[in-house]
Image (cartoon, rainbow, N blue to C red; front, side, top):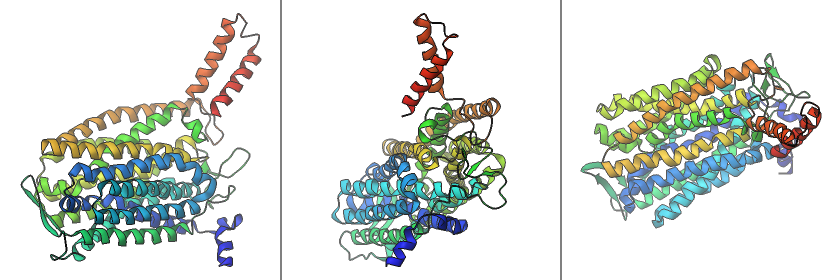
Length: 507
């Protein structure tokens, strides 16, 4: 045991001996486990039938999980940077596993608040830590293939539904019996019969088994994770910049700047990116929370076919992450987000009028693939815009979009479904928001072009759109003018004063 402990935690050059493709496999294993949240819709009907919870109440646990995920990612980026991906991954394993197992207990005793607290809060914390830990690590290991690397990592997250959807449906059905207490075979919603074939025991046991499996899988994936040395660069990657006086491991000469998390918050491009990401993922999160029920109600498909659609969603979610992210290495991240926003708007405007299950599913898969691609392109986009100095921190900040979209979009569609008896209203609302998103991403494109023109490229480039710094300089100069001093004569004092003020703002 002592030897194992030493091998596990000894720092230094040993991380350079690791195979970066095995690092990617480890990241995929972690994300396959936590990505199970995207199969949540398979629990919708059984939980409503067994406990009489409404659609909105059941959806609240899913929304809470995504909201807490975003808050955790935003607040724990510093922890990943300081203590490393291995320790962060192990913590995520324990917390996420406990959340899923606790959800099983809450189903067994019939407590909705406990279910929201375990699945939503505990599970969300584990999700947040487990999501950012391997992604920031892969950005450092693959400076030459950022889109591909982050696509591989979050491909696992999208593929989680592919495994969990059918597996959970199978376990809930197989572990139940008509003689079980609380067994339900059919749930009738507004005249539509939805298959259930589950019991309290089978649903709770499903959470127990899956939670234990996630715990072990995340631990296994975390044990191999490690950041590369700061002076490391992949062989043959001419664009990679090693750790020099101003360089950062994983940086490239095409990065606009090398900023810390706090510095990134002082730039307009951060907020343009935030709103672009928020709108790009809203449609997918909305549909994921209701995919099974929506497919059955709009197209008349059976529960088995709807569960198959949910499982297939995982293929396109995962495929979109690796496919669109890899393509972004060639066509550019801004072009990809423009495509995501535009094509999703068109799909949402058409879907309410489609009754064919396969055509409807095709549009559903397209939207989910764009959502997955947005998540996959985001870390690489962050590295392009802000450098690799604190990717985990900035990534955490931008994942608050996930928290907000995960809280608002599923609740929006559940509320509209409960009050109007249909899904079309929510689809039209999100389609309109996506059109606004096209204007925002256009603004981001113009800002990037301006920065590339005004400032030198490379890891030591200064951020020229620091609005706080510009405001500070203006206020400093104005203060000297109001005092009756000649700014030209005391320019050195103005610079010194402004410099001190800027450092205070940064601290």
